[in-house]
Structures are given as structure tokens and as C-alpha cells.
Amino acid sequence: MAEHSFPPDFLFGAATAAYQIEGAVGEDGRGDSIWDVFCRQPGRIKDDQDATVACDHYRRWREDLALMRELGLTAYRFSISWPRILPDGEGTVNEAGLAHYEQFVDALLEAGITPYPTLCHWDLPQALESRYGGWRSKEVSRRFADYAGLVVGRLSDRVTTWATLNEIDNMTRRAYHRGASAPGLTLSRQVGAQTTHNAVLAHGLGVLAARAAAKRPVAMGLVEDPEVFWPVWESDEHVAATWMAYEASWFNRAKLLPIIEGRYRDEHLAAEGADAPEFTDDEMRIIGTPLDWLGLNCYRGQPVRAVPGGLGFNTMPIPAFDTGVTQISFTPLALYWMLRWVHRLAPELPLAITENGLGCSEGITTDGEVLDVNRKEVLRLNLECCARALAEHIPLRGYFAWSLLDNFEWGSGYSVRFGLVRVNYATQQRTVKLSGNYYREVIRARRVL
Image (cartoon, rainbow, N blue to C red; front, side, top):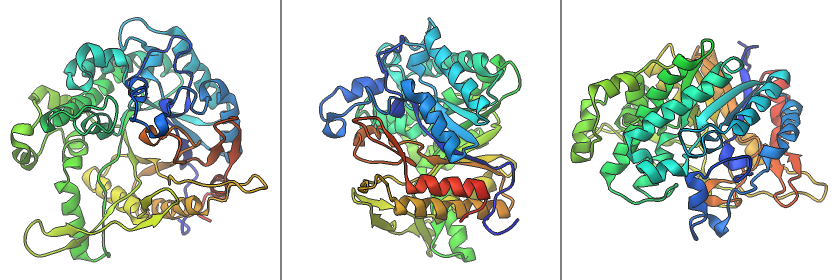
């Protein structure tokens, strides 16, 4: 392969999440999600903002599809709103919600853009939180499987590649133990571990239900954001220390490792002690149901060096730069070493970068341009990492930039922008940024420019 080039079948996409862009939270029969309730609590979101309108994508999706075509995207990763399909979380289906996604998928396919839907990107129906305690209950794991079977059963005649959940930690431990995500609870460490297990179980149950309901064979995967490490420089000792750091991480041992290996490692359970989750052998077999592909999100990573004694490694301060909002860590080598580690764990498993980008504040020139050179450089360096991985025969199938649009950035409200396309939230006008124009040219050339 030519340096920094991509094969003809490599997918160039962008990613979004339903709650962050759709708006229309009370329309066409949609029920409340836990994030709707969280946003109504004063002080939870910066400036007490909410996603009631967001990018108005629910109404403006045709305009956004035209932008995808303008950028030359060959794939689009989006999420389906669980409370839009099942307003009560279970039971009666909201046909208007399903019809919306059917229409959208049909339009993507007509435009030659491969749909990559995620079944749940954090927006658990509030009814399930109120009725069962949300991810504290394995009953919700089973309700997710029902939902997965329903949606995949309806759309699998057109959509063949699916992800179950996105970034489990952000909807479990951060939500029920640390209080940073909806529903915003600060319960025990054991509850945090149990909700993580219950969501990992939901993933496994969802894969089985989706495959059983599918009208034709489907590729089932998961989107995760492992804790990422990279060697301070590429010597044998620092690379070996990097692998140690990956596998010592609670973040990785509680989620990705059991999904790939079908077990919790003994050292993980020993370290957890009384805080370990309750589980059965049958649940672990379900959790270890083989994946067809794995999506990986990457925004940062810690440098690692080998040291004598102790764990055999230590981590160092993360490099950072000022984006105008905050100090954001930026380590482009992280993406490459994340791919290396996962490929080492599961050599035959196809991979995709399902989120990668830069969030910052940015201005617009008097000529109406957004000259986000920083985001363009992040994009370029990470695409170089992808090309390097491909040259080393890592089965990387595609790259999805986060995000297609500026959007509601959870607890940060609208203060941070991630989009290739700027959104004026007052007028909903869309403007392709410098980074979006650059990405379009990379897609045309199929190499890093």
C-alpha cells in the first residue's frame, strides 16, 4: 500500500448520537429518556441548557443527508432513540418512531451511504429507570434484548451492520456511582460495578436477540472506548510495559476483556473483592458471544514507560494543548496503539474507529468561514495512524469522525463544538468547516493529504 493510503473498500464516515442532534423530544409519540429528566435538574448541564431542539435533525435530516453527500461520506454512524421506539421502554411500539428510521435508512442507502446504527447511545427510557432502577437491574438487560430484537427485526432487510451499546462506562459507573451522567446518582462502588456488568450482559443478550430476529445475516458489534496507553517511545521494554498497562486497567478488565474472553480475569475479581458484581456462568457465556466486528472510540491516551519493580510500568502526564475552552489531551499515537492492543487480543476481529475528533470553541470569520486548523490537524494525524495500522495488516474497516455536526455535548451543553459542520443554534444554519473540506479531499484521494 502506498504511504498513508486507504484501500478501495475502506469506509469513510462520520458519527452522531440521537439525543445530541435530533431534538423533537416530545414529538411523534417519543417518551422521556433519563437525559431529558437529568437536563431538567438545575445545575446538571452548563448554563442549564437541554436538547429539546439540539440540531433539529429529526426535522432537518434531509438537509443533513445532503451535507453527507457533499462531504463524500461512504458510511454514517447514528444511534436510534430507544424512547422514540418504545416510549415506555417496553410494550407498545411507537410506529411513528420506527417509520422515521425506516425512511432515513432508505434515504441513506439511496445516497450510497452505508448505515451503521447503534441501538443505544446512553438514552435509556426514563420509564425503565423509574420502574426497575435502570441499569441497576438485570431486568433492564432483558428489556434491551427485546428492544434490539424489535429494531433489528424491522430494519435488517436493509441494514446489515449494527452496534448494541456505546461506551458502557458513561451510562453505568459514571451515571450511578460518580453522578456525572444521567440519572446522576452517587451510589456505592459496588453499584457502579454491577451496573457495568448488567450493561455488558445487555450487550450479549442484545446480540443473541438481534441475530434471532434478523431477516438476513447481520454483523453485530459493540462500540467501546478502552482506556488507552502508548509507549513513551517504541522500544521493546516500553511496548511490553504498554501491554501491561492495558490489561491492568479496571476500565478494560470490566468491559472489553470479558466481552472478548467471556470471563472476568481472576486478578480483576480479586482486586474488586466485595465490590465485584454478581454474575453467573451462564451470563458470562452470553457476554462472550462472539462479535462480528468491534467499534473503538478514541480521544486520548496516556504515555507509558517501563520501570523496575511494582507493576513494571508507570504512566506519565498526558500532553495537552489549549483549545480555547480547556486543556484537552491530544495524543495521536494513542489511536494506533489502541488498534495494536485490540488486534493483539483478537487477531481475526474486524475493527472500526467509530469516534475520533476534537472538541473546542471556535469562531467564524467575517466571510462566514470556520478555520478550525486544530481539528483538521487532529484529523490528519489520526488518519495517518489508521493508514499505519492498515499497512501492518490490522483489519481496520473504516473511520468515523466525531462528529458530523456540532451538537448538544451532554454536561457541557453547547459550549464545546466537535463538528465537521458548524451549527448556528439560533438559526440552525449549517456551515462546512475547514476540517470538513479537508476530510472531503482525503475521501476523494483515498490517502492522507
